[in-house]
Image 1 (cartoon, rainbow, N blue to C red):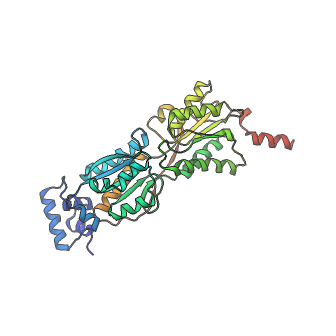
Image 2 (cartoon, rainbow, N blue to C red):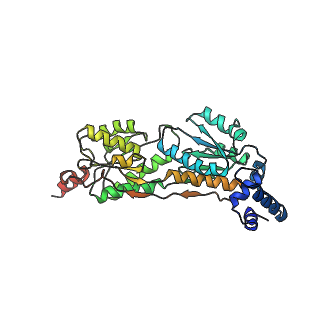
Image 3 (cartoon, rainbow, N blue to C red):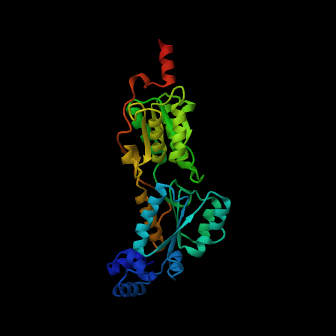
Amino acid sequence: MTSIHDVARDTGVSTATVSRALRGLPNVSPRTRALVQEAAARLGYVASPSASGLSGGRHHAIAIVIPSTARWFYTTVVEGVDSVLRREGYDTFLVILAATATDRERLFHNGLLRKRADAVIALGIDFTADERRELRTVDMPAMVVGAPVRGVRSVGIDDAAAGRAAMEHLLELGHRRIGHLGGETEYGMDHSVGQDRERAWRTVLESHGIAPAEDWYALGSFLMPQAKIAAAAMLRCEHPPTAIFAGSDEMAFGAIVAALELGLRVPEDLSVIGIDDHAWSESFGLTTIRQDPFEQGRIAARTVVDELAGLLVPVRATTASISLVERRSTGAPRPSVSASPTEQSRRTTSM
C-alpha cells in the first residue's frame, strides 16, 4: 500500500508538506501543491480513515485540555504544542477542565471535542476507560503529557526516577533527616505524579535504613502558598529535617521562604531540592531535577500531526529526559544534626 512517505520520496518534499498540500492547508506553494497532488494520484495514495476524514476541512484545529492556566508547567507545555501546530497550519483552542464530572461529561460525551477538534492533547489528565472508548469511537488521535495512560500515547518523565535522583543527591551530601512536600495536585487530576514521587522518597530512605518520621511528610498541593505553610509546620517539629525534597519547584520555593521566615539559612541549616527547573528556579538558587515541558509539548504536537497525516504512530509512552541541576540551595548538613532520630537511637543502644 502506498504511504505518505512514498509520496514524499517521489516529490522530494517532507511528509509534513505532503500532508499540508493534500489537506489544503496554507504555507504550501501552488507548484508544490500541484506536484504533491499529481504524485498522490499517480501512486494511488489513500490516507488513513482519520486523516482522510479530516482532510475534508472539518476543523483544522486541535484541542488542548488543561486543568489550569495558573501553573508554569502547563503553560510551558502549551507553548511547545503551539510552536509545532502553528507551523503546521493548525488552530488550537484551550479547554480548561475542572475536576468535576459535569465538565468531563460535557467534554467527552456531549460531543465538544467531536464538534470542534481533529485531535486532543491532554495535560496532566488521566482518561477513564469510558473516555478512552469515546476517543476510539470518534477515531480521534489523542496524546497525554504527563503520567502514562493505558491505551493512549503519552510523553512525560519517569516520576519515580526523578524522585530517586533528588533523594540520592541529598543522601550523597550527608543528609539523613529528609522531609518531603508532595501530594495530589489541587485539581485532583493526575494522581500518579505525586504518588510516584512520594513513593520514591519513602523507598530511598528505607533502602538506607532510615524510617521516615511522620512529621517529615506534608501535603503541599504542588503550589507555593500551600507548600510554605506545610514546610513551616515541618520545620517546627521536634526533630525537623535537615533537607526537604519538594515534589515540584513551586513547592520548593515555598519551603525556602518558610525557612527564611523562621530564621534558617539555606543551605547551611536546610537544604532544598525540587523537580522541574521552573523559570524562577535560577533566581531562587534552587537545586532541582530538570525536565523540559516545552519539548514535551513539541513531541505531543508532532505525534498527533503525524497521525493526522496518515502515519502509523505506535501507542506507547515516551519517556522524556531529566537531569540534576545543582545550585546553591543544597549543601552538606551541620555535623551535629546529620543523623536521623532512628540512627541516633541505634547508636545509643549499641554503646
